[in-house]
Structure formats: C-alpha cells, structure tokens
Length: 328
Image (cartoon, rainbow, N blue to C red):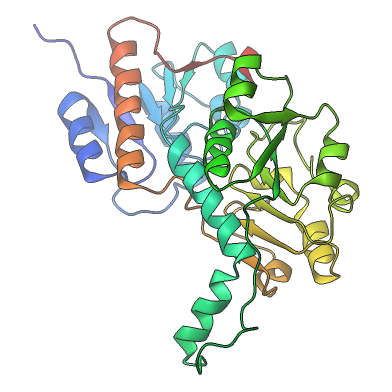
C-alpha cells in the first residue's frame, strides 16, 4: 500500500517548472497569486502541513512556530538567507530548517559589478536622458563618470559571493581588498590576489568602492553605521547586494546628499520595499528592486534544491542543506 504523500505548503508563486515537479511528488498547496501570505494564512499553514516552503518575505518567528501542529517537521526555505526564520526555536520544537545555498552566487556577483558600473559610469542618468528625449548629441564633458580599473575595491564579507565578486573585479583591473570575520585560507587570498584588512575602519577609509556581501546577523546590523560611513572617501561609492540592514540607510542618504560619499548602488533595503524617499531622490544613487538573484536559471535551481531537501527528509535522511543554529 503506497504511503501517504507529504503535505507541502508553498507561500509564494515559484517558477512553473518547480511548481509542476512539486505537485508530482507531494500533496502540495500552491499560492494562487504572487503576494505574501497573511499572518493568519501562515498560521494555518504551519498547523496543517508536514513541510512549509517559505521565502524571505515570510516572517517565520518564534510566535508563528509556537503555533505549529505536530505534523510540521521541515521548513524548506526557498532561498539561501534564513534571517527571517527563528532557526533555534524551530529546532527546539523538533522542526528542521533547510535552505538553498550557493545557487545564486554568480548571479548576485554579476549584479554587484553591474551596480558598480551603473554608479561610477552614471548609466541611469544617461538612460533617463534618452527616455525623456533630452539628449541633443555627444559633448566632451557630458555624463562624465570614472573608470573602475585601478580602483581599490573593499569587499565586506568574503564568502562565496564575495569571492565571486573578487574574481570579476580582478578581471576589470580593480585592486581587491577584503574584511571578513575570519581571514580566508592563504591559497584563496593568493588566487584572488586579495589583501586582508583586520580593521574594517582602516579598510573603509582607504577604498574607492565598498561592496557589502555579508549576511544579516546581530553582529552585522548597521555594520556600516554613520560613524563608519563618514570614514569613506568623498570620492568613494558603496554597493550592497546582500542585506539592507547592514547599512544605516538614513545616515547613507544624509552623507550622499552632503557630498560625504560620491554615490551608492543598492539592491536591498533596511525596511524591505519601503525604500527611503531620501535615497530615491538622489541622482547619484542607483536603486534596484532586489534583482540580484533574479535569473530564470537561478530560481529554478533554488526550486530543485528545495525539492531535494524535502525528498531527502521524506526518505528519512538528513537534508543536504540543513541549517543548524551553530552555523548562524
């Protein structure tokens, strides 16, 4: 007699090929429209499902997990970041948490370089002029930006994505520097031709471009705070494709407006979609709607990892991408 299929609730619309495969393997409840679940809907999901598949737009906190039913045994997150999930509380209640690491490394690194170029070469300003029909022809001093070749890049967070950014930056002729919680292995430093700075303050003060590529943790909240941002050179720019909470957005907007920093390129924000209007109104700030991992290939691979984690769990084995509190 065939065993009962796992009950799986997916909180957001996923690529069609991923949803089709989930439906073939499990008793899956899919989202009909592409909006986040309400709190009440999330409560109903954790009360009735064997597996919850949330995304970064869902707050899976201690209060929600406390209402989980006896059936819930796995939270298979669709995404690498898990700061929206209370992993410790989940584990205390016997609920495993998995994620999808490494899938969007190259996609996010590509977007980091794109933001560097967009800010330093004033691409959005040129695009806006063309779209408005304001361009009257080439001029020797129009839209002058700066080349990134030869500039010092300071990478904050030298994990998978940070290293991918370093490889791309080197190809553009940038000098690679980095600060990390732990110094990377000598062979990695040598391959990337990267210089380690134990002091983040000293690195920030000497870089032409700062790239934020670290995760969101209590220790990285406002790591780039007002004091540290003021250490940056007036000609320097900062880009962030990791987590918005790492930068104090209000301080950043104030410094850019006052000429303390030359510009910024952001794909993530401290308050999610509530982007500070002070940033939106600045011409030397490039804002993107969290597009860093937005490739068809990446989204499908994320779904495949979710499916593997669920299937492995169903078969009685440890999910390959299991998250444990000690990793955080």
